[in-house]
Amino acid sequence: MMDELSASDKTRERLVEAAREVFAEHGFQGATVREICRRADANVAAVNYHFGSKHGLLSEVLNFNRLKALQSATEASDASPEERLRLFIKDFMLMLLDENNASRQCQMMARELADPSPALDKIVIEAIAPLHEFLGRLVKEVAGRKMRDADVRRCVYSILGQCLFYRNSHPVLQRMNPTLHYDRKEIEAIARHIADFSLPALRALK
Amino acid sequence: MMDELSASDKTRERLVEAAREVFAEHGFQGATVREICRRADANVAAVNYHFGSKHGLLSEVLNFNRLKALQSATEASDASPEERLRLFIKDFMLMLLDENNASRQCQMMARELADPSPALDKIVIEAIAPLHEFLGRLVKEVAGRKMRDADVRRCVYSILGQCLFYRNSHPVLQRMNPTLHYDRKEIEAIARHIADFSLPALRALK
DNA sequence: TTTACTTTCAAACAAGCGTTTGATATCTTG
DNA sequence: CAAGATATCAAACGCTTGTTTGAAAGTAAA
Image 1 (tube, chains in turn yellow, purple, orange, blue):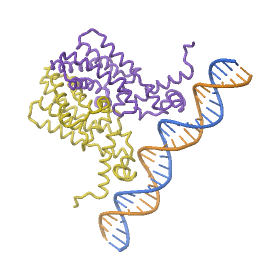
Image 2 (tube, rainbow over the protein chains, first blue to last red):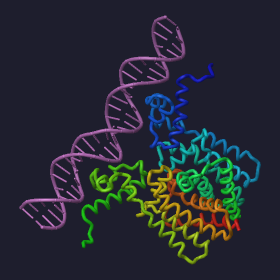
Image 3 (cartoon, protein in one colour):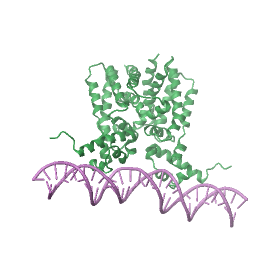
């Protein structure tokens, strides 16, 4: 009947949003319920009331709609395989490096990799495995010939590894180059580099 | 006069060795002093007595001799640039993925990247920055022509990103392929793939 | 053996953690 | 409005953390 959120729903929303921030910044272990509640302007007990536990909040926070949408968009395109790979890498990097974005799932995923929490299983099944399969199909299309599964997998790793490096190693890159800043132009240049680096390798397979 | 270690020195040694293990497994934040002392068969107070604090123990544990030795060995070789890059990637991956190795620094470095502790500055200055410079020189040699600094840097990132992916994403890869195991043959195959993937990209620059 | 110094130890400390509680406030509904 | 369900709150709980303490044990030299 009512489109507006109840007071309770608003608190839930604020908690989820704050949790996204804090989990992304400090990881699951490093994040504290108190910090999340402080940012959400809620009581310490709110997390347990609305989500049962800190873990419950985590799995509420995890959703991969944007990542899935990105794959669908790429698959729907009728561009050449090479162009689709370029497009995917660009959008993926924009998602990964967007600094003040609404979807911080990727930062959280990156954190999970380094320090898996019980939520990692869900992440792998729902987001990462499909992503790998999607990229595997794309790689095979670009290569344009039969490939051994292990080789397809390794090419996927090579592409993903390049992309994730910029996120995983951000603290280090920042220290080596303090003026480092990812604006849209920079991100697109990075994406272009990764595509330019990867495509010759895939073409060499032919 | 005496070559043997005093009782105190032995305790120090055991603490350092245990700390390497625990820091590598759980990261700095996740590791607990009690766990380290338990594995070292020492009292909880031992860490603070011998190293002042948990952070003191961390910086005692960090040394990068093996990583440095690896760079020197590569630079001393008189093989072709391409061969030297292949060699470096192989040795680097052997170091990264060696499962029961004595040098767990790399695991710790990988953890630092995801969740920087105050020791990260030391790691960057002493190990990572020199590594990037070393790889930058190698990339320029392989490319064999003038390159813009930004492009050199990105190629270094592409190579390192591929290598580090196998370590950083290990928990995920393990979940997607439970039988995954890095023996020497597998590691060498991975290294070969990374070189085969990267060299066409670098040659394409010519 | 006595003396001075170093190292170990069990115990405790203060602080922070996730979570629970029971009272209070705020809504919703009859 | 009144009654019942729902949401918020300050406070506390039980536990773990890194660190400190002061006594006990060990070591080395005179």
